[in-house]
Length: 97
Image (cartoon, rainbow, N blue to C red):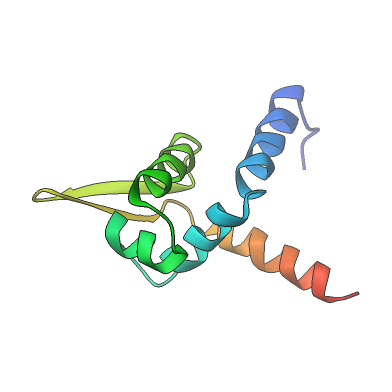
């Protein structure tokens, strides 16, 4: 495994910042079941659509989720299932104690 550069360390730190918000975690676990629109996500996390849209933008900007237009609707899904692996291992770690 190669040595970690400063850029690598900053990218990992940024990813953990994005994953550190409880609302964003709820969104990610909801998207585990597949593509969803903002309305469905808002209902699942019990938040206003505008607040969910803001969180989705942040997740998209950090390439954690991706969006695909279907007609007038945007469908959101996980961009990379490695994020779920990271989260699963983190939950395993915290439940271990």
